Image 1 (cartoon, rainbow, N blue to C red):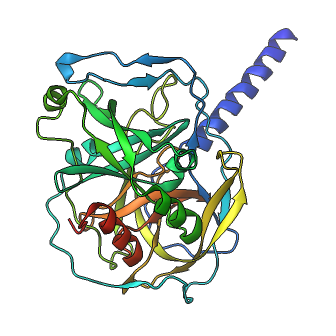
Image 2 (cartoon, helix red, strand yellow):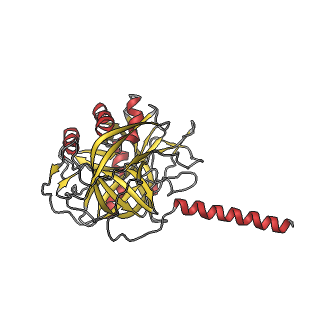
Image 3 (tube, one colour):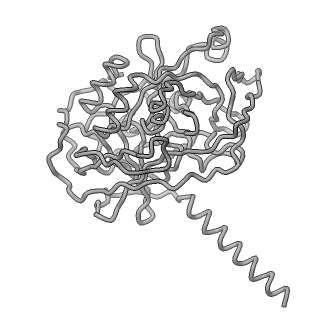
Length: 373
């Protein structure tokens, strides 16, 4: 009798474990045509907010591999599960007028040959207090800037604390992956306008200037050619069905002690575009201010003009990859910043904010300079 009971309990535990794994891991798949957007589909914002112990530890120095952290790293996170995330409805309208005018297509320079190692080296993790996200670095006028999602840094802006950690990765040759390693201070630029763009216009985008270490010799030792950066143009509007890669620090990739510390890579394609018709303000206990701000969108397949948002379908997307780089590998160009995710009918959809959309690009260029390259 006891043996039968033990076997029954074992079977139940095994079944629960299998269901949990399947719920968090998506299989690769091939997409042939863009999906139809229906009223029941929802997009959910992917903010990873994790509790950090009050006690911090200093990252170990590994001089032979070029890692020597000058700032405190968060202690181990023993509860890696992300909190419940809000939803935003997908409207059924495919072609409708928008409040923010779209920008006519402009030609862009020919894309350079793809170098994935350079891209991954320039894809950073963002730590703002208790919030983790992802980002990627651009270089303009001998300065380095990290682009990320505004909701990753909004708590800091509201607290009038305008610094976060920008964490560059290190390539681990033993396991052949990139992992967080080099901490640098990131200064939030144009915080007032970033907050207004996010809350009033639905532009979920922020920029941090990467501040060099005071110890310049240490920076020169670790980054002799300067900080890694993305050296690819922004995408044109004509990229529907193009293949994409999403790079970010998803919390379902990494170790139990440090979820999200390893750079993840997800593949997919562009399926539609989005025009912002308003902003939804909803109560949320995930943010210190008690609210979250979500773009209300009309979706379209019109690729003759730029749109503020791009809808992608990928083989995975997860909390922590918010702010990550979405890259067009069909044309070798930057699509934008990953800001949201939805799982419907075993398919994973992501929402991307487009830095090449007129009003967004104008704000970026006023903040950091020309961003065509």
